[in-house]
Image 1 (cartoon, rainbow, N blue to C red):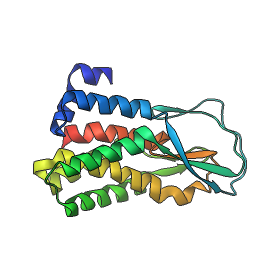
Image 2 (image 1 turned 90 degrees about the vertical axis):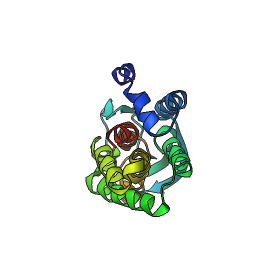
Image 3 (image 1 turned 90 degrees about the horizontal axis):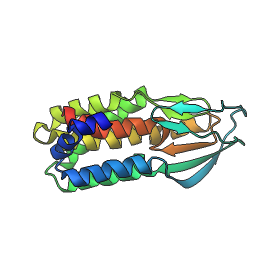
Length: 203
């Protein structure tokens, strides 16, 4: 990340999104800091067998703290991986000339791709390869709206990952035996966070 900042790629990405560098860096910092903030929203019962997790579990950019599992999963919403990207997506859409139909089409395509490439991971939650979403979102942005490809790539990429890799996978959570699951957190945070940078650069 420091290398990206030094070569000013991040500033270029934010400029393509129509954000001043100061606001862009603030969004970046809030996303990183907010990645460790999970807001509880619900609990679901499940019947997966109780199993022990290793003492240190890593998935992508985040270290996942080990919690005891009692046939119950706490559902969280991640601040940095869900709320902030969703808010920025709404802002970008409201300040662009993108049509609602093109945005919905982009989100639908990335949702399908994210669902296909995401995988339930026993004892941990849902994860997906990091580069699938940003590369796909950049292509979607260029094909659907070349004039505003960066904004569309960010919107369809971030919301598409949230829908396809998180919300549509909620039915799998009850079978994973994980003590908690975070919408926009853990493995999908990587996809959402990297999508916001790489998709804008490629589009």
